[in-house]
Image 1: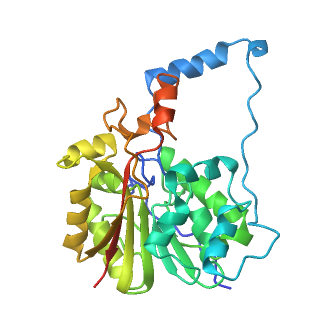
Image 2 (image 1 turned 90 degrees about the vertical axis):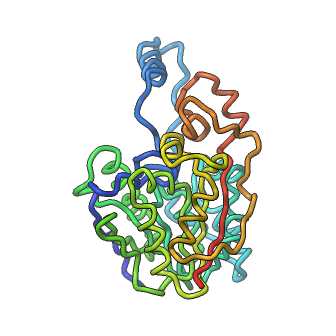
Length: 320
């Protein structure tokens, strides 16, 4: 059995550790700073008479196993077993309609024997799928911040993620957490050791922190020749500037392709698996206006729920 290593990494230079949101490491669509709308909603809930409010539902707790039923031997069957597993909350499963994990992982070529590196996993939405999928025959390595050094939302997110891993050893005992410290240190593992490197909704954060090019280069270095770099990111209109991307969370597809090519990658394929034509990308709080964050709170909530999660590019690059 491989050792489950929860390693440390410097927080001061990992400003973008949230997977696909702002700077928090707690979730793929990290929560931006508190706004007047959310503050007002919180205040109203606090002062409302107890008798007028429905009791809050208990927080969902994921199970500490996938299933009491052994996994099927075939790859597709194992993925279905993982998707239905107890290690995922019902809230997480509800997002499958927007995130299309089965189709996305199939497009990236992830199999039970794959050696995978997941970058900036946030709250671990995809980790909960990848870890049991490759646990027996493959390998999953991830990045996370050092909660002993991190502060604020980043510290809380790092602690929560580590607790997730420690809390379900039957699911996560083979996950290796690797130390990175961008931009000074960005080694993702031994050179040429990974079959697949994955990033889900992180690139706008890397751009904002000024080290997107270094992350792409590190991904190239850790991959085997012929290996895959799988990218999912909120998709901006063509020509969107880097400044606008960091403000809104949406990145132009050509920007991502340019970053990848500069690192040495070759674009292998595009997919519209995660496209959303309802997403107009012109909201007051950028991508965080949409679910799951719903940064505007009750304001136009039904409108944004009807749109759903963001329009996203899904790109597969290869290391020659």
